[in-house]
Length: 484
Ligand SMILES: NC(=O)c1ccc[n+]([C@@H]2O[C@H](COP(=O)([O-])OP(=O)(O)OC[C@H]3O[C@@H](n4cnc5c(N)ncnc54)[C@H](O)[C@@H]3O)[C@@H](O)[C@H]2O)c1
Image 1: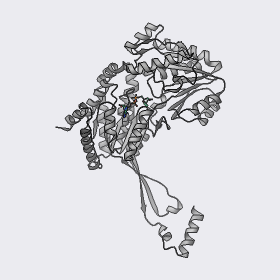
Image 2: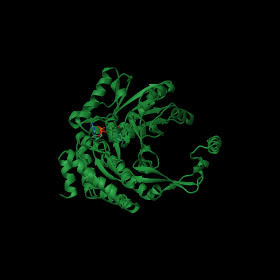
Image 3: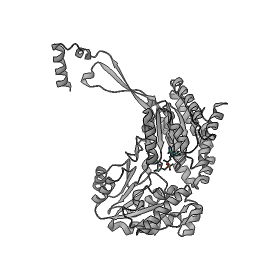
Image 4: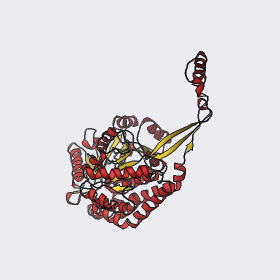
């Protein structure tokens, strides 16, 4: 059986442990044997081949994402393809300088030595991807892993099967399976993979599964990058440009049907701005997605919830909130057959409601009024650290104070979601929202081992070695006092 047929057998067999182990062994062998061959030119070529293969399959990707959750084509182009192409172009432009060993200066005590940091491939890496941006979040990390010279096993999400199938075709026609291989399937495939002693695991998904991944990695002391989720708050203060904030928030929240890890989860708005903001959000929703319920439902620019389980989960969050006194301010229209939930604003939520505690991950946006920003900051600080924090304000001291007094993976001022697209910013969470970061040089580093290489040329450290004669002891004392 050739290696491609072999991977297909693994995927088709639901990831039987033995087959997964054999594939891992092939990749391990390639990683060790070909370590030197995955040099700069080979890595650049791999990235070019990947980009060309994705470009050739753009039509298939667009059709697959339409089949999986009716993702609008312009959103596919902007949020699935563009970030991957940008990641590839950025890596190709910079890989030579990223991967060059760089010399580091020493201290006086290191006099007579030279030192370098060298980036080496980690080896065999596992990438586990979620369903919400299945192309972007599978190929984005793959770009970094290839740039760093690794072999890679990819596990796309089972919830977007049409897209996973295209991902597999792209990989199979571009790479031998001992360089990059795809293992399709559900959590059982992930678990079989997680039993193996990978050199690095890059996981994107929920904090709950992130904990399972980290526990499995601990068995082999495998390093991890965890790109997780959570509730990303948005603050709109009394100086904010309300129309501008509403325009950006409606885009950030309702693109991809709210199923975006860095979408604004809920809004805190200064009480005097609450009514103008809700009016502006409502105007914006209707302007973008349609004036009437019918227009909104028929519109081509609005996707669907990925499956019935998630539709029911969101419905239950909405029902729980309204049964405890929250008010639907806009939308709330549902059609379970189409897994359709219209763009929805709610007010009057309280911290006890499930919608205030769980990551919403859908098109429901609670708007919460505040009088005292310190109370908002306390609330943010009592919850798990978010992946993103958004601040709409014209007052620099106000946003600086919020940034100073809170923690989150990233921050946007007078914008949302866009931090993801910046090629030189680290993208990642903190604690519950993630460990480590992705994108550009940060992604390259995640998939590299930073190896310390020191060369002794004429250091005098040997003067401090035992036996500890009185003269050596005096020298050690002087060293500690003067150089310490
Ligand atoms: N930080 C980021 O970059 C980012 C990006 C997208 C999504 N997310 C987060 O991902 C979540 C939504 O995605 P999801 O529903 O696909 O996440 P998920 O955690 O349910 O699944 C992610 C992947 O893990 C696998 N998996 C599921 N259960 C598993 C188990 N028990 N053991 C091993 N593997 C298992 C799935 O098959 C899938 O491939 C949200 O929390 C969202 O915020 C984070």
